[in-house]
Each structure stands twice: as C-alpha cells, then as structure tokens.
Image 1 (cartoon, rainbow, N blue to C red):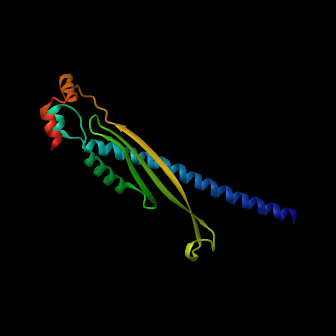
Image 2: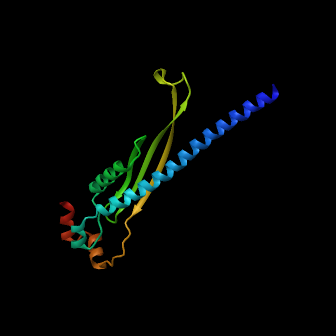
Image 3: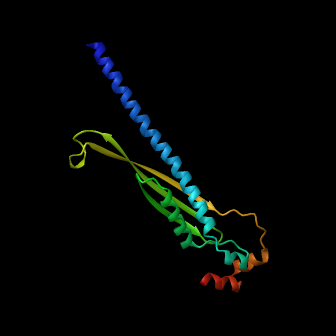
Length: 167
C-alpha cells in the first residue's frame, strides 16, 4: 500500500510540474513575442507616418499623429494571434521631435481540463494571464540639420512651416 501511494504521488507531482512548466513557458514566450511585435510594428508605423512635405520644406522630421495610430493599428491587427485579446494604449505621441509611447496589454486564456467546473456545464475552467508590454520610440536619423531653421521653428517665426501645420 505504501509503495502504491508513493507511485501515485510521484505521478501526480510530475503532472503538476509539467502543467506549471507549460504555463510558464507560454507566458514568457508570449511576452517576448508581444515585445517584438510591438517594436517592429511601431518602427514601421513611425517610418510610414513621416510628413515628407514638411521635411522637404522645413528640414525638420515630423510625424502625423493620426497617420501613426492608423498605421500602427492596421499593422498590429494583421500580425496578432487570434487566441488573445489585446488592449492598445498610446500614452504620448509627439509630432516634433517624433516620439511615441505605447502600452499593449494582451490577455491570454489558459484552459485546464476540469470536468463539471466550467461555465454553462462545459468541461473547461479558464484562467486568464495578463501580459503587459511597454515600448518607447524616438525617431533616430543621421541627417544634418540647419540650426537657423530649427531656431526659427522653435521661436514660431517660420511662416511656411506654421502654415503646413495648419493644413
């Protein structure tokens, strides 16, 4: 009797350990994949939302907020995993100099086989694990800027650039 109970205990502990390893691996892998998804999506959306007319006229890099959000959401939706719920939050979007702060929360649902305990008489009980990913992006360029144009822009005396911002 003693060896039988010991065998059952070892089997039970090994099943619990395998479940725990599986859940932790899914959580850490999901977090890493979310980070790279947000990073690559934000980088591409930033490059696509650069206002080229403003750059050619004023010599200063500027992004359009609405275009960035549209590009980010479009690219993100095309690359996400359909088994998760995502919540995208934009904390800070600066047009000049181009800077963006994004936080993406993903909710993974882990299903455990527990007969009779699920909702509506189903055989599954679900537990949720929340993965939060924050990413800050500043546009880095290697261009030489004209200090006179930058000073005029900061003082607000650059009429051409000011008229472009209103359009």
